[in-house]
Image (cartoon, rainbow, N blue to C red; front, top):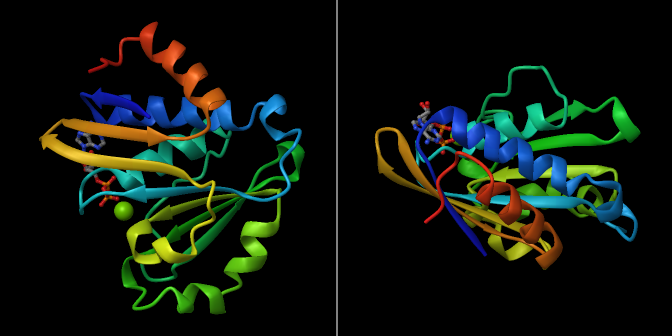
Length: 170
Ligand code: ADP
Ligand code: MG
């Protein structure tokens, strides 16, 4: 697990963009047979959507990303490699079954999908076993603590980046 503290919205976006780039490295994709799923945890205002915005820009998506609270799910096409980013906001779901009804099982099977889920605690039961966990905690107005759980490979690269960057570690 990686733990970092960001001191601004921009730092969180920068970190998220790096995570996106590392996840999409060709070497990480070689053996992938299913979607990449990131589960985002944290209270209202913790920075989940901010993380998603940075992540999307790291993937080269220039569209403005908002929480799809009312539509539940929004898709963004990536030019490169025919990937698709799927941004889900599970806040309004009463039951994980509602997401199953929206085709969740097919979505997580497709290795071309990168799926971000805000309020992942709402669908914890149906998250794939190897999902990437991102937990955000409010410290003060501009500071957030972020915990990232992923494969050793991905964590190693992000850790190296973190140590050579202005984003402070703890
Ligand atoms: P959530 O989706 O978790 O409800 P948002 O990303 O929508 O949260 O909102 C986070 C708010 O906190 C934004 O207004 C953002 O500008 C602000 N903020 C302040 N500092 C940070 C930080 N270090 N990281 C992320 N957001 C921050
Ligand atoms: Mg949000």
